[in-house]
Length: 374
Image 1 (spheres, helix red, strand yellow):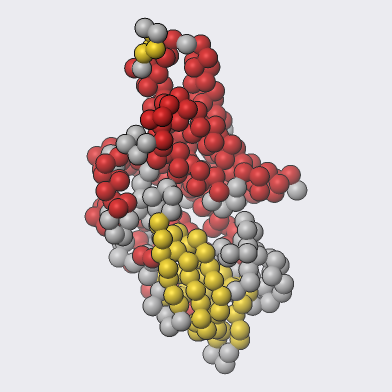
Image 2 (image 1 turned 90 degrees about the horizontal axis):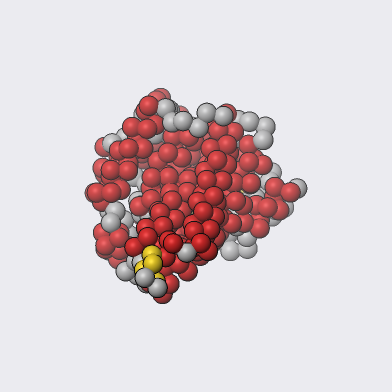
């Protein structure tokens, strides 16, 4: 396999790296977390102007025709700075559904404003009782004369408070855990009966809970075919897994490099910590975990982008490996830094918290091992 980036991908990677270095120091990030809306609107506008928001969309939709490999390049650099802006929520997840199943009129109405950053989307698929199963959907669409009404709750909707519309999964037939019978709709955030409760997450990002109280949807709101929404939903979740895996890879690179630098600077018994063999072994093991994740990330992303037969198993394997490595690299980075590793003043702890959230996002390590084995 050729793991080299194309010239265009390398240029994008370099530009994002400069952006992160210039704008995402720890103090700057902490300040953004503490202010509404939890990220920088100026940064979001800059991302749009630089074309990053249009990267995964086709040229017909106003984008640049990129695929999962291009998103991987971007998200890895975002992970190095713990970027807060809702690229994952609006572009990869919400936009990912629209580019697959939206009608021509829906694409014209929404994709242009999503790509220019003036509107944001969010994906609402998880429910309080669904666990990690995206096909466990209890929110039911009750048929009416001109559409459906929805009642129920969606939880852990990433960046839901700032979203202008939600891509929502709901059940139109079948049992609660059936993959068939799931439909999708695009519901504006100001629709009557929809309540959005936002809250911060432990990693500094924003999430929400949506409550539907007899929310009406019409045929114009529906995305794709009735009862056949799970295929697109699963593809988008796979894209989300690849994206957060790339973000985790960037975060792990920062953690192991910071740890190596700390052991070279910190002295104990008149020697730098890096002189001690047990810590040398630890640094090597952290690097090996990072490299294994990098290799499998390339493999899985290439399989998904090419529509390979082994794509789904590669995604499960990747998420399992990323989860294991996130714990190993994060815990060793914090332990090696000692008490400072858990302070707010040192960035190591912030990266570890983000890695812990990624481990649970879209299914945790044990869940994906089980899925890989079946």
